[in-house]
Amino acid sequence: MIITIDKSRTDNLTQQIADEIIRLIKMGAIKEGEQLPSSRVLAQQLGVNRTTVVRAYEELWAQGYTESSAGSYTRVRLPMHLSGEKSTGKGKPITWKHGLGGAANSFAPLVSSKHPNAIDFQRLEPDSRLIDQKVFASCYRNAAACSEQSIFGYSHPQGYQPLRHDIAKHMQLHGINTTPQNVLVTNGAQNSLQLIFQAYVTSSNTIAVESPTYSMLIPLIRHYNPKVIEIPVLEDGMDIDFLADTLGKHSVKLVYTMPTFHNPTGTTMPQHKRERLLSLCQQHGLMLIEDSIEEELKYFGRVHLPIKSMDSGDNVIYLGSFSKILAPGLRTGWIIAHPDCISQLSGLKTVLDLSSNTLSQAMLHHFCSDGHYELHIRKMLKAYKKRMTLALRLLKQELPKSIARWNEPLGGYLIWIEINTELDEPSLLALFQKHGVMVSGGNAFFFSQPGRSYIRISISKSDTNEIEEGIRRMGSAVREIEPKGSLTFK
Image (cartoon, rainbow, N blue to C red; front, side, top):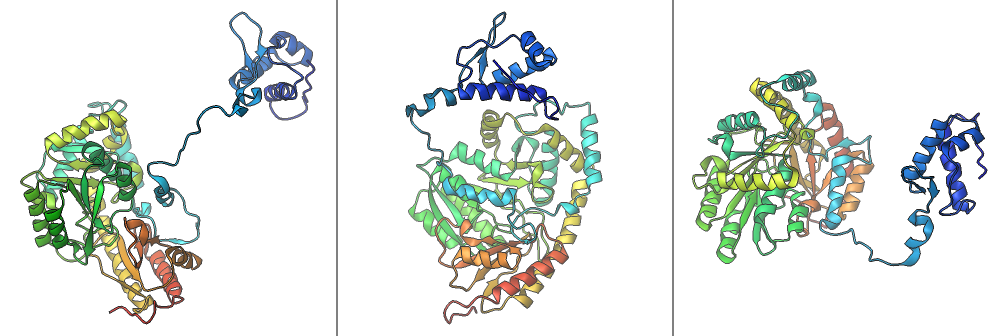
């Protein structure tokens, strides 16, 4: 076996030897089953340290080009891709496109942007510039130094007990009187929904959801494949008359709603509709999932208490999250429900992922118990009230009434805009991208095609300068749109 290496090259000699032997195997100069020289002999032939050859042989073994046993020589073997076994055509190919299907494309905006210089009105993610990183670092140090409970092991199946206590205490500010026993810590609201569907929803069930609705709920529902009844969202939230009529005709298992700062429309359900919705669910024995991840962000008008605050019959499963107030990277949310429901979901969570991240939970406990969470909420309210006020004023200035209309939200990050255009959605989004602004297309928030054109803008990641520039760019884009026929908005 003749191996040539170049000691003057700067690359690793071990890799040179391994690459050269692989080359000789591929060209057939070294046959399968042939014995390679001992590491000592080859090292003497090449004039290198024996350890270099030993490491090269280890690399060959790791890649499947050799086999050996204790006390025996190293022999050549051909990996499957060289032996011809792969080309026999045997075996059944796997179909990977299944379950979520094309909806997997919905994940793309969460992790990347193809337009890094654009103003981002697409992501629903709080502005990380508002986070006091020194306070966070201090809370992490305090969590790591805490000797009362280890942060390096699994947490309780329901979550870190001190954090569950903090959550229960905080929810009292929203009229929800609960205990840590009624709280399950999850890996964010999406994980909460997954657990609920895994535990309680089958393909034989019928569920009622708002239309439009949270976009990432749609692929989840399609995965579990229940029958879906879409309940229209009006200017004041879910159409309760439509729901009541539906419940009179169909056997429904659960209802999903975002009554406060609805995603994507930004609407808020008034008190009388909340009471009627809860009454209908109690009357028909339905689970009501109340998704309230932006509960804290009230800017204008009076505060509406969660439906869960009125839930004397334990019909409501309440979902909360730190993601939309602090940071989505913490992946920490919670469920508040009847103890039997919490027990069921906790057992399921243990099967699926054992427990949530103990260190993040311990850090959040210190963040909450030291009063930083309440201070952060006040900071967010002050900043985003200013930003939302600015955004609504600029939209009136920049977007022609004949092309666009929207309702003004009472809080949250979102503004839902109907566009009067003949353009299909890809063309509409491309127009905004051309002008340097990213928005979310409305179709992603519907099970059925809406028949109208919508966009959703989120001011969550943008400061006042970015909002001003972004809406100016939106205005430039919208002024290029021809109205749909002779129709104009009222």
